[in-house]
Amino acid sequence: MNLKATVQYLIDLFYPIFRPVLDHQTYRFLACGGVNVAVEILSFFVGYHFILQKQVIHLPFGLAISPYIGALIISFCIGFPQGFWMMRNVAFPTSTLRGRTQLLRYFFVVMINLLLNYVLLKILVEQLNIYPTPSKVIATGVVVVTSYLLQKYFSFRTN
Image 1: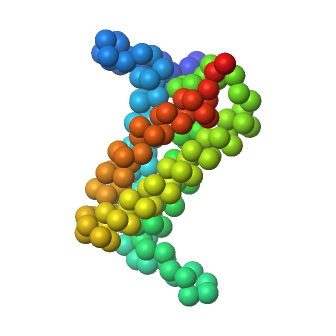
Image 2: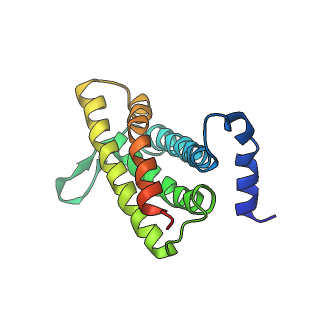
């Protein structure tokens, strides 16, 4: 059994529980998205606390990146390729678009999501004084619905 078939099998094991309320594709999107969110939040937490150790990143030309934005960049670098693979191969395997088109559209949607995450993190952490990791969880929750609609009808649409 290859990786794609294994991941599909593991995700579909739980589908009977959700069958009364979700169609198969929506369930797979939510399951893949859930795995991706968990990976991103875990990598955000590890990046913020252990890699960056809550320290500001000083760049050339006097630029500085706050540790939670640095952790957002780390989580993006891990979550993007993993998320694209899962969306393409598990959630939306019947898409009729070419792989390159899917990748570019997925990247566009992820950039919108990243911008939303950035703005929400800035507001939640700096204006509302909420800790960075719970702020990331809140920001991610806000992005999920928009992401689903854009991925289904734009990045991985079928004819």
